[in-house]
Length: 88
Image 1: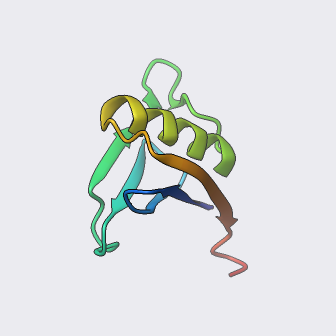
Image 2: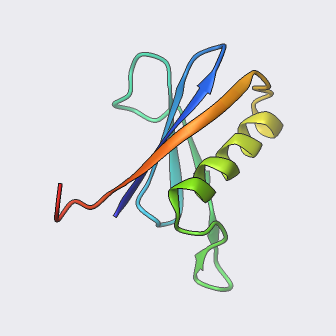
Image 3: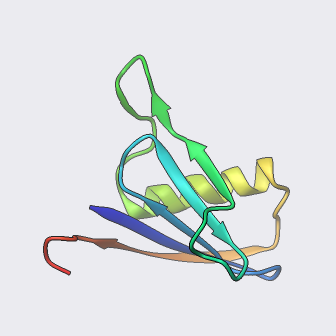
């Protein structure tokens, strides 16, 4: 499973990707081969992520994180999809 999100901001669109493991990768700018940020979402006591493994929940979490941690406040919305590598 791969969750992919696209966050739409006036300052530039942001792509996020997550396999459901410990880290959500954030890609900003033209180079989408290398993440510009990585967010650790792992709850080590419960041995699972503290974000639900759904694309919408991932995007909502990342929007809040970008606003709080990166002061990106011009976010207009987001889109998302789930990719199943065994099917796609």
